[in-house]
Image (tube, rainbow, N blue to C red):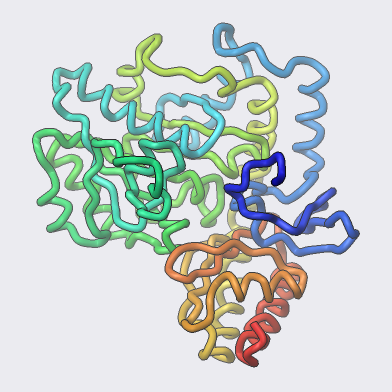
Length: 394
């Protein structure tokens, strides 16, 4: 048995370096990376601005903990608040920590405002908010809960795009509505803009907080800095991570002033969260994401990729059954009896890395820096992969 726990299976490919949108394995083979560390390496590999920021900070100071002020943490918080709905930010290390913090903030808000009975959250079927016990309970995916005992209480799950079901689930104990603007692990299922607006209206009507999980959709992934911007809707609290620091572990909870004020000293914390190394890289990542024309180019690349995928679907209707997503968060629905895993393996044999998702969907989450050359290369690999499956060899 390997000394590494077997919960990740037995990966057979190991990479030793990366450059832009490409990874090179230990045998020297080059792969086009349309997995990006599961939407994490937002600026690709070894981006010079990020490398410089990390190297400079590493030579000065790595970690102090939040017992002391961290100037770059204050700077990043101010920048994120200026760019979003938020008035304050809390920094952590991962997406599931961010969502735990977001749910805690929602509960705390009601408690300090005289309603401690409000502690439950309404979540959606096919959602995914992370792997902690509480966040697994927020989704209640039987596969993810298997062997971990009864789910933690406090979450009421309803189907998406059904406001009657959501309203019926609201009780005097309901504190928040928690949703992903695009359900990533659940199969690249975007929530309709009108539905997000209806959620905002329902939250306001019943005195609830609206919490968005933008762990995967945030930081330019859909062509806006945050995906909820497409609907013109703002949350009260938001969890984000993945692309926030271009590959360095970092997460954040963004909140309005009313919610942030409820998180008084000692109510929450993180030993590593917001440390100097993470903040240096996150600020450097934000420099690039907010540069002139960057997000416009992401939208253009996303449109070109989606158009190309739709053309492949037309040619391989026996393998593919749809294309979903927004920006550079795209999913290809694989038609049974073919599987997303088989299509992903065939794509890898053609030099393209992808990620599987629920509902037999193959995810494409390329670095946001890709251009037409990389898109054409990916489309060629996927066309060949579909042909392999159609021939019965996949």
